[in-house]
Image (tube, rainbow, N blue to C red; front, side, top):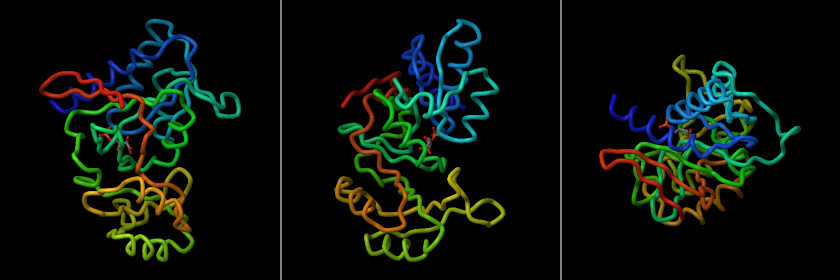
Length: 228
Ligand code: DER
């Protein structure tokens, strides 16, 4: 799978940024999986000394399996670096859409706690306008979610609650719902981000604006490192 090879290439390059003594945020998704695997290899084979906070129960499980020592915000309130994937990357601003993996709330908390927020992806994630290819995931409290969906429709979204394969509602690690919101190309993401944050019942959303400090992508043209 050539895309998986690109994801792994970007992930290994990003994992090389992690140094002894760092507190690291571990992302969620198929690209972040390669980062966790590589950091585990470095811990086991090179004796890399790190402590990590995972962005999902899925990543926590993988981190334990590969031998990465875990910490908590109680013990480590601030992180040196967080490395995570993205669903869309706007190359000019490094603004992102994240959340297709269902972990956007913990991902945004971990990203906001880190001095450096490095995005890893295959080159297909670049877009001219956020919202071009992906819905915008919005995490909402289950109580009154139908009204939140109604408010999101007024903002121009086609809001659909994410379901599991068995048809039941997908629940995040915080036991909230995700509404996948099709907005189409988002011309003013800052304005939408503010409107979403002010929508009662919305916990967090997948617009990660002005947060990424670097993106590392791999594709047919090779490895590409961008900074805002
Ligand atoms: O949910 C997320 O934001 C994840 O980072 C994820 O969607 C990135 O996807 P991928 O690395 O599996 O392509």
